[in-house]
Image 1 (cartoon, helix red, strand yellow):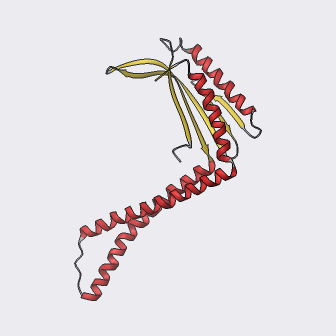
Image 2: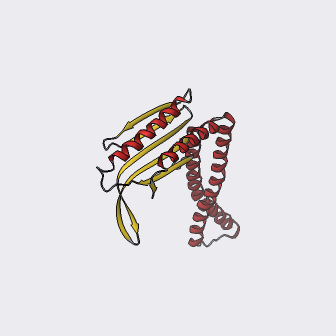
Length: 211
């Protein structure tokens, strides 16, 4: 599944001229995010937290249970923005967070595979049905003219019909998974944690200019 259940994306313009000048701001934001993640992890009994830094010093964190995962990544560096048609460099701190529920991800993947399968079946069934019609005409009349353009239309129509049926069945599958997640309380639990995290992040980024 490419799209998460919920996402949060912020790019901050730090009040500094160069990367070294912005290190203090980066350290402060990193520290506050780590404190927020640690606090949230302590507030839930089955919640596991992981925090790490990559080789470039960018901080990432994960809050997860057996049923859902909230992940967060940060990125510090130079970025570009267009102002009045001109490119201008600035020192940026980016925050990207995602909320994913395992059962919904699996349902979305299954739905996507189902859509693809039905498109393929439609592409096969369309021309096959058309040739079946031609065969019937041949038996009845003793001859048949095969319009090749109609074969192409049957192929495209089969793909379209298969795709539409796949969309309907895929949507039903995803809705069923969402209802199950809601009834089991997983959706509520994930939403609650997400809301708390977003409130903390909004407080952290408030002093800085957003791009």
